[in-house]
Image (cartoon, rainbow, N blue to C red; front, side):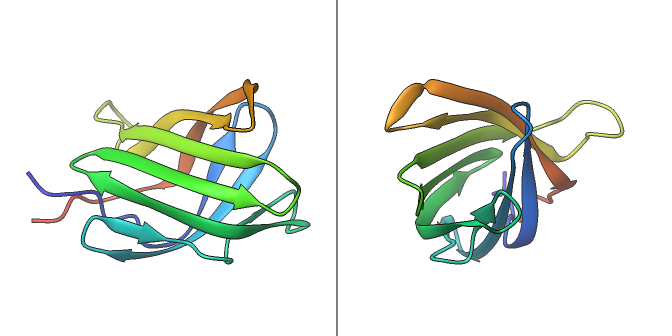
Amino acid sequence: MGNLQVGGEWDAIQSNEFRAHFSIQQSGTQLNGGMNCSHSGGTVKSESATGYVNGNYFEFIVKWNNGTQGKYVGLQNAGGDPDRGKIVGVTVDLLHPTQHADWTSSRSFPLSG
């Protein structure tokens, strides 16, 4: 089984009305978003963003410049249309663990190999 191919620009649409924009560079299983991610219409920017994929599992941690740190984990949806291939999961603010939300990726992703 291959790994998710999540490189590029896409959004995590959250159940708490936030929409995080990711710009991810992928090298094998390693992910780097650096300072290229944002939310709140671009007013909050990432100070760092790193993660990994393992099969259909996605994990990405973003340190935001507003004093929060989001951990996004999810699995590729194997269900039917229209969400087949999208990543669905949960995000939690690691500095404020009671703050969490469900999320879905704005697009579908293939598996490599």
